[in-house]
Image (cartoon, rainbow, N blue to C red):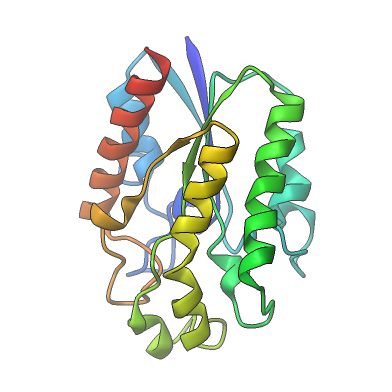
Length: 206
């Protein structure tokens, strides 16, 4: 059975914007993806709330993408799905567009160094919704500058995918973040994400 690692932040973890908890296995997109994959692919979930891509997260190694990723790569995968980078846009990190480019390229290079035969699917962070500015939980982390940078990040990730011969999937035209926080996705959107990612996996691995 082919193995697919889904590595990312709270949207890969399955954060529920309505409850602040986690969607159940069969409600979050990674779990739905496993249902779609049946016994053809094994889906390994590696999401973590508040995980950054390249900034050193104050919460430690588990929450810092480039630091923890090598530990997941100790076993072989056929495909690695990267959907990460939103938390680097928090105003406390004050990242530049050039740092974003370097950050995602570094993550890709880590994979290519440790898993040279694995395919890579890059999913850029979505455009952050304006409702984040009034979110009780996230308004102190993200601001208008975060939103503006999120509008530019897709092209940066797309260029990185092209440079490193990775596959690319932009979800912005497929799903919309919840109006509750502008960052996460409700249950109906989880299904759309799973279907879109599954179609890409089939195309890549078949």
